Length: 469
Image 1 (cartoon, helix red, strand yellow):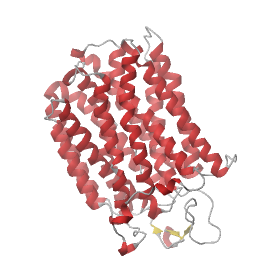
Image 2 (image 1 turned 90 degrees about the vertical axis):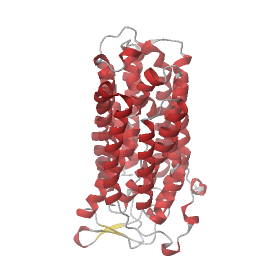
Image 3 (image 1 turned 45 degrees about the vertical axis):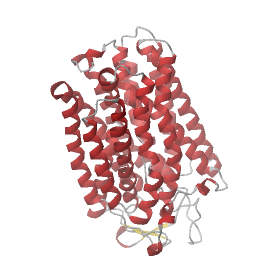
Image 4 (image 1 turned 135 degrees about the horizontal axis):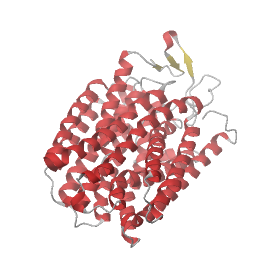
């Protein structure tokens, strides 16, 4: 789940009477002096300036340190499955990455509401410590349980403590330009997804696993320090100084909003997480199997393109996240998300599935086209989903909505890769053709997610597709 994901949207019609918005209506915004956006409950948003953009820099750094690693798991999976854990089955290895993704989003059950009431600084410090300890412990790992503890539990939990407060901070400084600002911040996950695979590809043959991971850890140290320094919140908690621990608890009652919008949006994000992790985890291994490269060639020059494909996908996602943020601000975030999910479905079913099914296909055109298109559009739907969530609530409640939704979605992350790994074994095929079951599973998940989001759009705004929402 490159999940993601954490800012509040501001699309929709004005509230008309100037009173407080209902949970399913965005707060009315007016232009104040100096370009500051005024919200009808007295909250103001600078919409720019040095401090606001430094917050975006801090969020970008935090997301590079968290989602950048999240988007680079394909490199780690390829090395573990062919070198350190070569005797384990794909589904067994899949639990390392499924649990890592699960921890990344499940821990948001407390992270989001705690950010609402206490701010980002303490959470970011705790996340930095967990991430760094986990990554450096990973460099010493050689046994299966050690990878689970170091990478899945510690690094995954640390990522959850970095993502939500980083993106939540951006939401406190931007309203009208929130999609653009969050899109810029979200490019950090793509930049890390480009830098880290290429770095690992270069370092692993020269200095080995342990020191390659330690160098990664030192880079994360710098990024975490920048995030802790610059991320700040502005909007006071809903209950002000009377905020208590009860205000940090998720609330399942948000699913009973009377419209089904929150329930179906959550279902869609669950399905997106089922689908998204499969290509991002298996692209390097798919290429190695497609080319028939044995395990001892994992770090050879012939295998270099496997890691470069993952970097290409993440590089495309950088542009996709930025473009989607800007388009979402103009045309509506749910509208843009529908297009994004349709293109994800098209890329998987139209390019990856034929490449996996056609035997002895010499050309790399389908695989490269899939990698570029999927990277671009999947990056955009990852960054849009939290903004869409924000359209269903007021900003003081956003952490609670985000946390409750992604608590549910985290279970999709948990089972996604183990299911895909089991399908690799179940096909009984060899080479690239053993992946066809996992590709079909990805296709079905994206199709179901698309239908859920279309239902929400029709339920809330009807068939008028020109309406911004």
